[in-house]
Image (cartoon, rainbow, N blue to C red; front, side, top):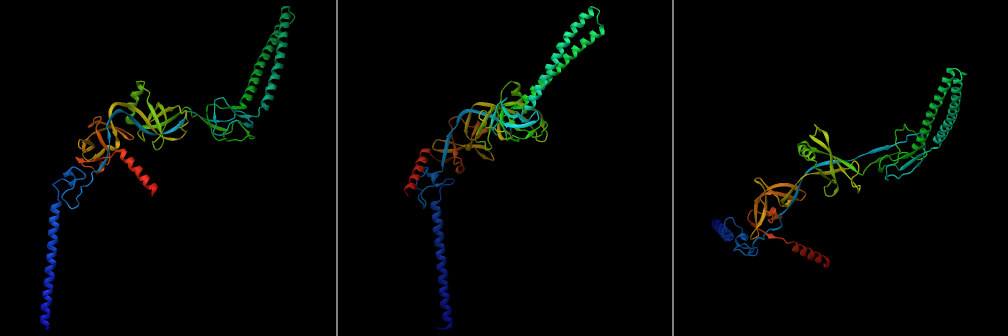
Length: 419
């Protein structure tokens, strides 16, 4: 074959190859366009929306509709909702006393355990009382001596008065004897004071609890010589029943609280732990501080708690909720049902045919997992509380029943058990 014939043969092969590729491309394009037209639903509707049932088969390739989004619902109810003022408070004991000795001497005995609850008047420590007992004996002896001298002076003064009447002694001698009687009477008063002082020192040698409370760690051990001027106390006693909580509230809320107190209302205060998950104690508002903190714009409130179970501990941080008012008969729903959008706050309400309809509402107070609705809902309305992120206005839904979930969980557990 000549060179020209070879070139002509290769040109025919290239032409057929290009023609074949073009035909294949056109056939594929036609199949794609024709198939898309067959599967295309009506404008604005999904296959599932056309049929209205999750099991209907549309005229597309797959033959199955998309499953309806599962949701959980709850009924709106009427109830009471409190208006609270929240703050971070500090537990403060009503009394904190550093117990020190009033006399000097050896600490011979400690009569309390660290951390023990003591009552007012309980003996908690003992100072060696013997030096003060000796002082008492000396004071008693001195007073007895002065009493004897006074009695003798009284007898003498009576004699001098008789002699003065007989003109046997001068007036000056009588006055001197009467003055001596007064001196002995003054000495006896001083002796009595010395006796009482010695008795008081003996009393002070028994150290008692000045308040009821919890004893802290012992600061001084028995055997040490202690003095009334020592800076270190034997122990610190903190009163915990009752106990107080001090917490700040924004100054804007001050007029409402003062109005309640002016009318004689007792405002309830609840103390919660750091996570706000457990209520520790319930008390009452005691008083309000006399000035506003200009740095924070808050005013300090003080609440009193009985603290019978000792749940509140001195210097503990607690979350405080002051009950300011209670709204009666309002519509309540779980707060998880509330959705936010640029147009406002709304909830999905379940209507007939298991259809979720978006409804704008006005939310009032929200406490924990419950919210009050001022307008937009009525008692008995079913609101979506789970699965709302997959919904649109007017979408059909599948309601999840707790019994079905429990049955599935039991089935899963049984399957795992016997695998």
